[in-house]
Length: 339
Image 1 (spheres, rainbow, N blue to C red):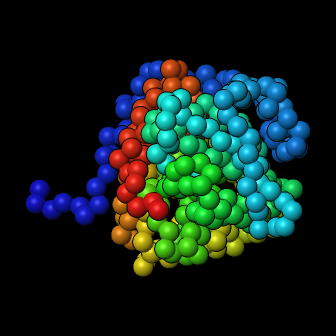
Image 2 (cartoon, helix red, strand yellow; image 1 turned 90 degrees about the vertical axis):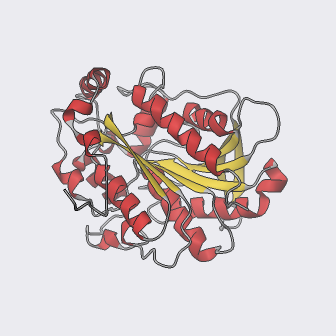
C-alpha cells in the first residue's frame, strides 16, 4: 500500500492475545476479591476512607513508610495550610528535582500519605523528591477546592523549592483523579505563570473528559475491575454536584476541551491499560497534546486495569514496566525546561 496514516498507533497492544496469562489471572483475582465489597457511596465517603485506611475493605490497607515526612504549604486562604507528604530518594546527596504529586481516589477518597510506596519508587527512579498534595476531598469540599490546593502548592514550589528542598520544581504528576488534577495544575501554571516552564508531566490513567468518553460507557466486565461507569458517575456527582454531563465539559473541569493552541506545552507521559474504562481519555488527550504542538508519549499496557501502577511491582509485570518507563521519562527530562 502506498498510503500511510498521518496518525499511527501500535494496534497490537489492544488485541486480546497481547494480554499475558499472569495479567489475566490477576484481573480475575481482583474481580473476585472485590465482588460484593461495599461501595463508598453506600457506606459514605468518610466512613469508607477510614475503612480503606485500616484495611477493612477487600483491598489491602495502605503502606505507610517511616521515612516519609508530613509537611505543609500555605494555601490562598489566610490561616489554612495544605498538608503534604514528602518522600525523598534512598540515595544520599542532593536531589535533582522536585516532583509535585496528586494522589488517586476519585477526588473523594485516599490522601497524601496513602501512596507512599509509589512515591518512594518515583523518588528512587530519578533521584527526585516527591511532594504529594493533601488536597481537599469531595463531597465535603466540591470542585474547585481540591484543584485550588494543587494550584497553591505548585505556585508555592515555584518560589520556594530551591530554598526549602535544594532543587528546582520541575514535574507534576498523578494517577486517575490525580492525573486529572495534575493536568489542570499544568494548564493553570501555563496561564498564570507563563515564565515558569515544567520539564514534564506524568499522567497515569487520568480522567480528562468528565462528560465521559465512549470507553466509560462501553467497557464492561463480569464484575467490576477497579473502576466502571457507575463508580465514575458517583464520583462526578460528589465532585460536581448538580452539573450535567454537558456542563462538565467546561474546560476548567474537563481539560480535553481546553484550547491548547498557543500554549508552550511541556512534555507529557500518558500511561493506561487496555482493561480500563478511562482508556479513551489517555489516547485522545495524548493525541490532542501532539496536535497542539506538545511532546506526548503514550504507553499502552495490554490487559492492565485501572490503577495498575499502584500494584506491587514484584507481583505485576505491568506495574514493573510502568515504573521503569516513568523513571526513564523523568531522568531524560530533568533540567530540560524547569526553572
